[in-house]
Length: 150
Image 1 (cartoon, rainbow, N blue to C red):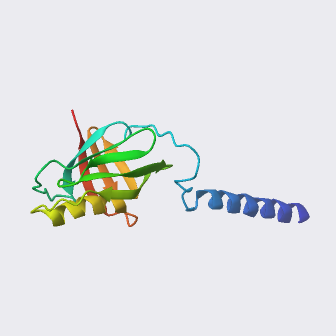
Image 2: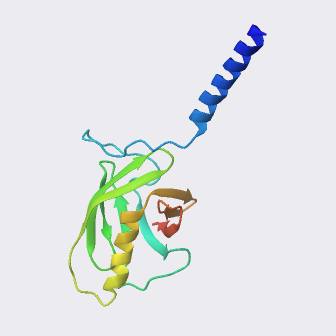
Image 3: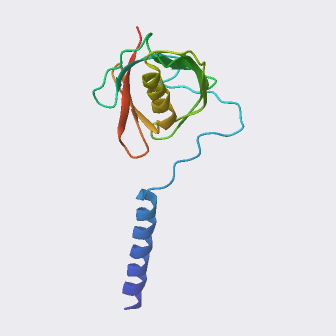
């Protein structure tokens, strides 16, 4: 009887450890004060805006695009203004843009340009499928899509 109780207790403890390992945990922080060196299919590649949301194409004065450098710096355009900032990548396709700033040109489609910048600021995860990059928000909603520039 004692052996059965010990075996059951061991089984319960093993199951608890296994469930804890499989359970959701907060993602590791994406940023710290150390020197950053990013790599992967998102880095050192120009991405041109394809869609906002799942199917909306924007008509902007110039192409919206961004590029993440290996040092984490971001450059690009929201379709009206130049943008710059920082990007961090984490486990499980986590992405975080920070310190985004844009120039302040007056454009007829200024609201759409703000939506492009907002997409970057809200991006939480990404998925790459061939030449497409899709951003998802923290609620798993599709924020928009980008296409790899030739």
